[in-house]
Length: 269
Picture 1: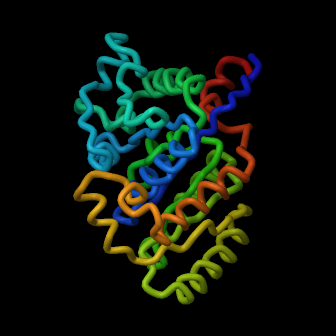
Picture 2: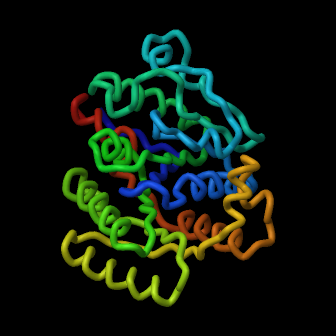
């Protein structure tokens, strides 16, 4: 079976450690792309503690069980936010993605793949951690962004994410976003050393996309359940986010990956 070439780009956002601002990053990048007229779907990959819906002010009504049973389609579970932005929020129900069996996970991959004709971009906000449910879902993307801080407990987890994705799924290129920096020069020095060591040990390429300063106004956007870029469109922080969109747009997608990467071999690709 030949692999189909979709125009939709799927971008994965991962972090080994929680609390690094990954969900805020995804919600704001998605909103920026939507403002550019790109049909964008945000997917909350954390089914136990999903925060993307909260960040966007959305309360999901669908359940995993209803989708898997065919009672509703995954498309019916999507909530429109604007003309170009939609959200598949963390579903109600007791099952997390990591708890699904292989057949059920593949069924959901098929369902998400069917959405690709509807969107230009699909952004996946994964749960924190390194369990197989996270890494399997993360590998189902064309581009991979890892979010970290410059603290050792955070970037060692980022290293672990890259190690698993590179060794288990042959992913070789990563974008790196550093958040909550109190000293840009120091963070730059730490991350350059991190990249040097990681690329040597894992045989991967890492592009440092941006180092974000600590930004107190982010908490205001979270309280208001609105993206930072909507509240502060002229803020330098918003400009940095726009540059990440531009960088990811210009980088080619790894077409040998994507959602079909998992089940196509079993179908005789």
